[in-house]
Length: 172
Image (cartoon, rainbow, N blue to C red; front, side, top):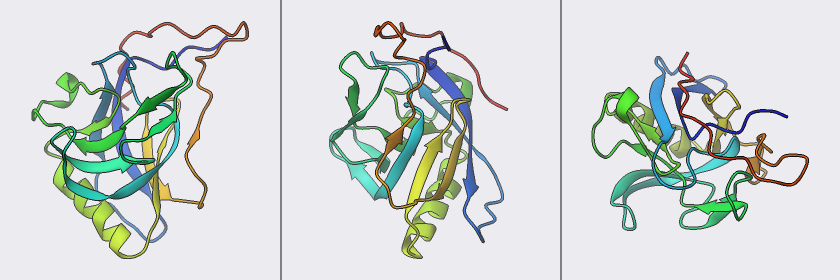
């Protein structure tokens, strides 16, 4: 039996797009607030940039779809909604960032990350955020499929759901 996904994790966002030499890594955190915790592992399509999402008053990119449901094996009903890649709205340092399951980016890293994603999308790239089981995020080209969550140690063999896991720092 493997460990459930942590309630909160933090790490680095990296790019793995042929021909792109993004010079830095962006610090992010996910979870730590709300009932469902951190972003599920898997590949999540990145939408076009939205300078102001009315529901949350944030600027960012929706992961999978905006205001829709997406699979989360750790949620009690197997789904969750509204996961985004966005600037931390309170301007906190990385170790203090909390989110409702989004990938919340440190303020000092947000402008370069946002601009690189927008630039790639303008060049015709379709991108996904790959969240692996170490809590690291890699932005890469989409293979054209829909979101593919990883069955992340949350549904045990006996059919029960995992309890909320402790906060864990996965930063490398």
